[in-house]
Length: 308
Image 1 (cartoon, rainbow, N blue to C red):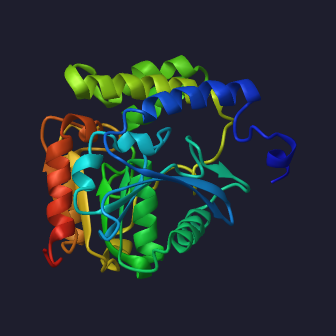
Image 2: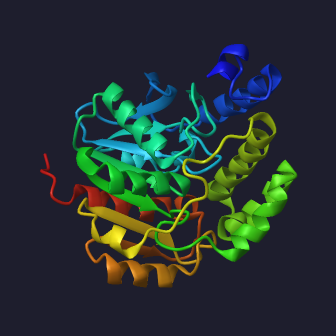
């Protein structure tokens, strides 16, 4: 990518913006609660930063973050997930964090190619468990649909789209964010109303995420989401899925339309997909109910595995 060659601070707006964002990133990363390896993995599309935790001989679990979030978004769940699994928390190459793309990731096929190449470089030839959060869940769902050969199981955690359309409220409230980074504060407070009115660790994680999103919007150049806006899958696409999948959604979800209707639809058109509804939370499911969500995920991933 010519821009990356001209500007060593790509994909940031400037060298100063790069320094500002990475200083906050590194400060937040110091709270990662367990020992981890950090790898900058060279792929055809650029360098992908991966935070690796858990037993070296554990089954692989690759974690894809939400939009405007990095691998650090898994901080409240990573200890439980890494007890048995070898976790690979990824900074998506098309989003924020320490990954640096050399060419744009514009389409779903681009994202699938990037993941294939990343798995190659990590030595994950088969049996990969893939979990995504929000936009990361959309990427994971597209991978299940188009390139399932390497997967053991997949988890879609509060996907933005896939099962249900993006809500009108989300679309309307997101418009001011295109004008001002500060608009993300009320926008996130609406999306994640349960955690925004909470206290303790959950609220602390949320406050750090708001700070990160606002700063990243100020510091990063605009880059497209793979495939544009997250999409809703067709019934016939769901019918083709034979990879074991777990779909988890909070009862107060606001990014997509009604969570109960989403569950009913999925249970009707794709009964092979396991579903879980978590109460007392919405899109903030991973901060409000990290232990409950982790247990749902681990029960699903552990099913059928030999125990030691």
